[in-house]
Image (cartoon, rainbow, N blue to C red):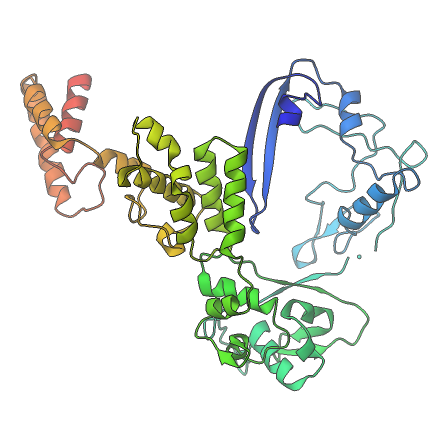
Length: 433
């Protein structure tokens, strides 16, 4: 952002808007929108953004990167004569990404549409590259022991990709030297017999184990073991390390030294602290580590750095020393960020319990943070202002609320008929009627 808004590498910026997002593997990326002081021309954009294949002779490294990582082969069943792809059930359909793109000599700004970048044809300054129908990707089953989905069919085997992999490793010496995700490159899964069979052609396939988050703790560590243990013959074999059978996948992963150590995370936190004074951003980043990374017990990091996490709350309260209330403010904020990232309670990472306790929405917590004495006094004062029709309406509504409350425990204001509900109804009546 310094490059864009301070160093002005694209010109002077009037305003900017950005949103940091996190991918499945915990890697951040950012969406940035810039308002420029000067009108941005098509020629300027073409100097910054290219949708063309680089010149192999002038930019060999860029050419290698683009052709290796940014181009895929034709879609399945591609019909060049009709520029259509083979969709579900063999039907022909247009490519969802609108490929192949039409060649254009110049970049074009659409009317409230995505820009059409310059894509010159061969012979007009553009370049071409021929790429082979890329290897297919096989998605591999992942499940805990006896927790797989079962489809009841006559004479059908109950083996999944994973359990069949265990059996294959027990009888096939070559397979015993492979990781689970390497299997589709050498074997094909027979859906009828539920058995991995050796490939009979030179074709290959890439294996991808289904993605899971670290919130499903044991499943997450099972997946991690499958990417580090060759040729396992059973779930128990996966949990075995140096002759010791560990009771859980997490403990096995820890014994193998596959978890990030506490010192690494501590250095990460301290590095963030040294580069920002925004404590809310610090707590948000810390929370994202919980939600998207394989963290162990973080109590040590919290105890050592909690003053830094809570320093802004110390200033807000104009206090001279830290206390439990200030630390709870910081814990509440961290917990809220973890929930926003889809994580669970911070206690599972070794941090103290926040005041939030179990997950509830901000609205419910805010509505419950009322002063009963103040509301009771307010009800006494405002009830004297009601006319006869308002009084009738007030008594009827309160009667219904108090009866409904007997069967409800989750309402926003129904938990305090002597305070919140009466005040709420009174304020509406005095405004509307």
